Length: 167
Image (cartoon, rainbow, N blue to C red; front, top):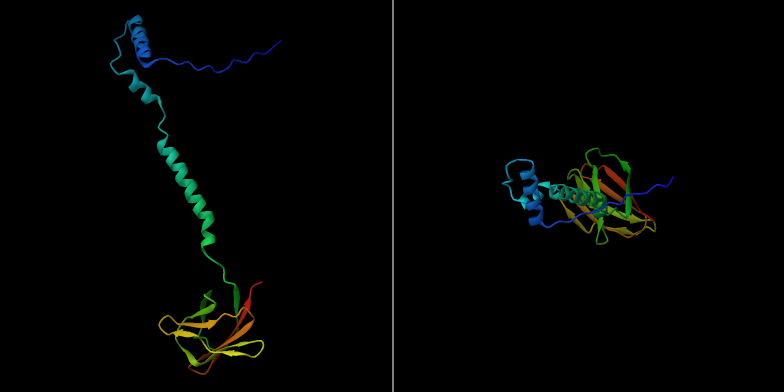
């Protein structure tokens, strides 16, 4: 027994010829003639996929944005860990590095600018580059070596921060 596969054949017909054939079928069946033009009947048969296609592209775009969004946030090239915090009012909120400077943001403005400093493992001392008392940010140079930052509060307490560059 031999199996024969029937191929999908596609038939094409001119619109005017198709309209005439449809009218002939209606007259052969003793029905009233068709009043809707045949090209409009063809348009109604086409599936409305523009909205579905737009939805798929929009979903794909949002998915790509979702997966690429972590690339917009650069990780800090250094870890800042708090070693000693005697003052409970002075809290480090965040830190980031930009233009070879280490920015430290604190919870409130109770630190003593004159006493605060950074010390490398070689013993070199560095004063803050700038201080913003409105946003509570102290800026130190970022040296890409392990350093210790000492922040002193106005009530004579202190905070010690260890900065370790990531390798």
